[in-house]
Amino acid sequence: MKIDLEKESNNIAKVEIEIPAKKGVDAYNRAIKNYSRYMNIPGFRKGKAPRNIIERNVGKDRIINEALEILLPEVFSTVISENKLDVISQPTIEKYEFEVGKDIKLSAKIELRPEVKLETYKGMTVDVEEFQHEKDAFDKSLENLLAQSAKLELVVDRNTKSDDIIVFDFDGYSNGEKIEHGDAKNYTLDLANSSFIPGFAEQLVDRALGEEFEINVTFPETYHEKKLAGQPATFKCKINEIKTKVLPELTDEFAQKVGPFKTVDDLKADIQNYLDKQAEATNKQNSEKAIFEKVLENSEVEISNSMIEREANSLLEDYKQKLSAQGFTWEQAVETQGLDNIMEKINEDAKFRIKNSLVIDKVASLENIKVEPADFDEKLESLAAMYQMDRETFAKYMMKNPGMLNGLSQQVLNEKVMKFLAENNTVNFVKSK
Image (tube, rainbow, N blue to C red; front, side, top):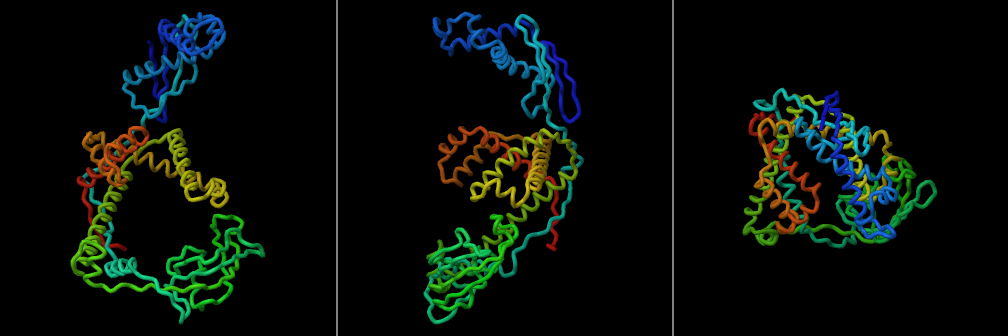
């Protein structure tokens, strides 16, 4: 087999290949046999129809395509191994000449992994803003814990307050038309944690039990339903119930109910320990991010348009699935955000993700960082525990999804590289601005 390979710009290799006639004949005959095994031809048993009958029923072009499918994996494997090519996608055939009995000639393009130039990736000092909890973080954590065990009591002798929970009726109109799905009876709303239109919950404060009234709001310009975006609306409301949260007393008995604690001091110590670990984890995460961003700054890589297009298509599908999970359609997203804006963001994300991946792989290659079986097993173990599955069941599930396995392997490699970079660079924590 003759191979003539030439590397072009944008990490593309062009290859001209001549395959000996005998290999072509053998592949063509195998293709004939493959078709004959599965075809029902009147007068012949499966696998027994002569060549000319198969050719007449199937067509030579289809048989040649089948023969190429048989030949090309081995052919390209030879091309790649002999030339030590680091490929990132399937080769693309541009043209071919296949005549049975003659040498096969074909031209193809192979996309290669872009070369990453790394100036510095270790021995650096990086400034990182130190994360610290707000001074009242402990008090708020304790308050939240008490709030989770709060009891609701009906209120009949005062108006609503901003931290009450109310049960009310509402009926919405915009521009003289009733708002679809804009009404409800006996709806429960936590006034302090409302996800309604801005300004809605605030107008429900200082209202009397049984009071009927109207409130006026304006839908945000970015509201998902275009017809209502930026439009004024009026809601007719009636307060049916007012409830207030009554917090439990902070006692040893309370501490024993909410966890494995004997005293209030034990509970407080656990809260402080959680906050300390949270701060430590956040600083670790911020440090790794800052170091890697510095490595990215010190790197150069030429990314082809085809790589960006493939990654962008993958991100676009993910985006559509997330929209669907949230109850929105692709058409609604295009209407509210604009197709150009969406695609610009997706393409930028694609470039960023590709560069990240290439730089991580480059560091791994330079430092001989590999995913060992023990690393993979440890990751499987932790994920199985997170999803509350036994390891064997989770492993079988993963084996059925090669894409997920590859993603998991890349995730493990990413973590090992990040750990290496953290250990081989210095972080200088500075006060937050």
